[in-house]
Amino acid sequence: MANVTINDRTGRPDDSFIRKTELIISGVLRGGVLLSVAVILGGILYYYALRLLGRLPHTTFPDTLGQVGAGLKTLEPVAIVTAGLLVLLATPVLRVAVSIAAFAIEKDRTYVIITAIVLAILLFSIFGIGPYLGQPGLTDVPNTTFASLVFIALSSVFAGFVGALAGLGGGVFIVPILTLVFHVSFATAIGASIVSVIATSSGAAAAYVRDRMTNLRVGMFLEIATTTGAVCGALISSMLNDTVLFVVFGIVLLISAIPLVARLGEELPRDVQNHKWAAGLKLPGTYSDRRTHQDIPYHVAHVRIGFGMMYVAGLISGLLGIGSGTFKVLAMDTAMRLPMKVSTTTSNFMIGVTAAASAGIFFQRGDIDPLIAAPVALGVLGGSMLGAKTLNRMSNVHLKKVFVPMILLVAISMLARGLGWL
Image (tube, rainbow, N blue to C red; front, top):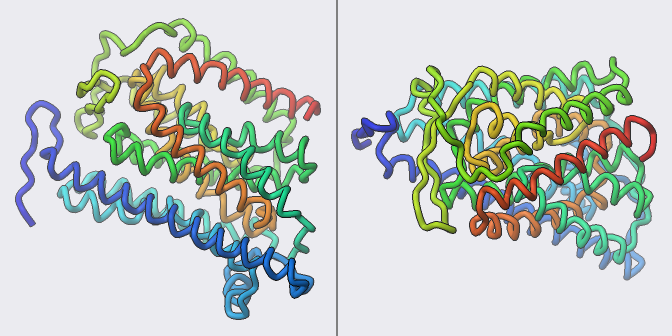
C-alpha cells in the first residue's frame, strides 16, 4: 500500500486517499439500493402475476431470517419481497463494515476503531436485543390491491424528495399518509417509516458522498452516539408512555428551531473556531458547491455538545421509531456550526445507520409488512435521488427555508400524535 501523505492545513490524508474512501462507500450504498430495488420489483411482479392467474395460495409474511429462507426455497413471492427489503435494511450495516476497510486504506487507525465500535453496536442491536424485544410469528398478508401499491409508491416520492433535501427520513409524511389515507395500522405505518428512513439515507447518501457533500468523519464519529441512543431507546421503549414522549419531542423541536430561524439569512457560518477535539478527530473539511463552483472549507465547533445532542436524537429514534433527522441537522447546524448543506447531507448519511439499529426489532415484531413497506421503499428511493440532485443547485439560505417549515411540520405532527389528534 502506498504511503499516505498528510495535508498540513487540514491534518487529513491526501485528497486521492480520501476520494478512494468516498467512492468505496458511495459504491456500497448504490449497489445495495440497486440490488434491493431489483429484488423487490421482481417479487412484487411475481406476486401479482400469481394473483392474476389465481395461483396465489393463502400466505403469510415472514418476520425472521429462517422464515425468509424457507420462503425463498419454495419461491414464495412475499418472501422474495421481504428479502429485497432485508437487503435494503442491511445496506447501512454493510456500509459501516466496508467503511472499516476504507479507512484502513487511508491508514486512519482512529476511524477504523470508531467505525468498528459503531458496527459492534449495530450487530448487538440486531442480533442481541432484537430477538429479545421482537415477537416472531407469521402474520397474514393483507389483501392489498396493485392500484393501492402504486398510489403508496407515488405518495412516497414526495417524502423521499423532501427527506433528501432536509436530512429527514420521510416518516413525518409516510405515517400520516398510510394511517389517514390508506387506513394502515399505526404499528405497520411506523414499520414502513423505518424502511423509508433507510431508503432515504441509502438513496441520497450514495450521491452526496460521491459528490463530496458529506463529512464522513463527522458522520462516523457521531454515529457512536446515535446508535447507542437508539439501542437505549429501544430497550426502554416499552417502559415509557409514548404520548408524553411525542409531546416532549414536539416542544423540544420548536424551541430548538429558534436559533436556526434567527440565522435564516446566513449563507455560511461566520467566525467559527474549531473545537479542541475537532483537529484531533480530523473533523474540519471542505465541500464542493456546484451552485458556486467552489470548494468551501469549514470548521467544526462544540463537538461535545453535538455528540450529546446526537445521543438524544438516537434515543428519540429508538423510542418513537423515527429517523430523528431534524434533531441531527439542528445539532450540526446550531451546535457544531456546520454549513447547512453539510448538515443535511451528513444527517442523510447517518439516519440510515440510526434506523438500522432498531429496524431488526421492528422486523421481528412483525411490524414491517412487505406489501406496504415495499412500495414505500421504492417511492422514497426515487424521491431521494431526485432530491439529491436538486440540493446541489440550492444555496444554504434556500435550504434553510425548506428545513424550517419541515421542523414545524414534524413538531406539529409529534404534538398531534401525542395529543391523540392523529
